[in-house]
Image (cartoon, rainbow, N blue to C red):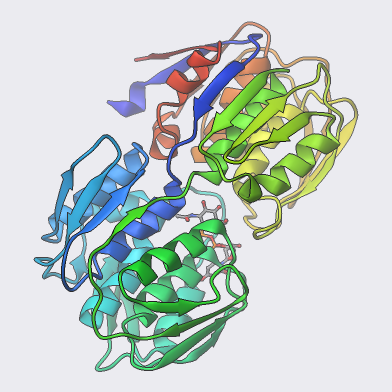
Length: 421
Ligand code: UD1
């Protein structure tokens, strides 16, 4: 039972060495439903991270009639030719946010979809009105009944869609449906995150016609058929950023391999401001910490700004930085749940709405804390690494959803983390 598992962390160890970064969670969870759009052939996805959300998504595809086989450590083949159901009403759908991509994929494939309302981390209201607005613009009728989103379209017809907020999920979801629509769809104010580009590249390899991904205007010319292809998932920007922050927190010397340094620029910039040294290689970054990082101000923003997913891990380091930091969370209003846990460890943090004022203290002290969501879990692990004595982190099922073997990777760098029941 995952619910009963905990991490016990002995603080005070410096992280030294090098580790590989896994495939990107948020790319993988969009590429899997995208693969279901193939009308012919088999998709082979390489570098899929070994995380619980990916396992659950693979199970969902199997439940819908798809054939998914593991053909290498991180390589899976996805044969969707026998996917015949557009109804995704398994409870697994409620376990994660990314299940909303079943809406776009099923709408593109069948012109209809019935999918449970998605789950995922409880970090704010998280509406999906922009996804729905996009589907409606393509011609779908959308109703929600008993927690199920139902969509039907006689024809999907390309349209112009201006997103009221920059949404990664809405951008990708509209792309999924629009690549099988008639004519041209233009998404304006689109998200520019690396995984938006990854999904566009994958769909193009399947025969789609998508231009402009990575800018705020994406143009999609619909095609009749999509075919299988082989594709490698990009490295995980957020996993890499988490380890960069952990290295900085422990005054470590850590090299991360298999990364795209360009995706990490906003994190590198903030660490450098804190006095940390970051050396970029062609596909690696080395982070050299300092004994006492400097306080900084930080605001989360859509890419290429500082990612909201790394706000929580960063807060743990700033809790022991030299001076006062102000962290502004502009994406998710409920993303400060880790702060109460950090306070149990002695942190001096005041939260006012979307802002946290952090006065650095000399040291955190180990305590029993609980991860309320995925990135809160990463933040608490980092806090445990730098605290005096032992920290017990419960709620680690959230962490396993998105980090591959986090304790194994940290232990290989010299940390002391044990998973116990
Ligand atoms: C995705 C990521 C999540 C990351 C977030 C921001 C996945 C599975 N999850 O979440 O890890 O933290 O991007 O990088 O990839 N919004 C609306 N209406 C909508 C959609 C979004 O108002 O229809 C708002 C959200 O409440 C939020 C902002 O837009 O304030 C950005 O959300 P979005 O980019 O859509 O995040 P998610 O797709 O939920």
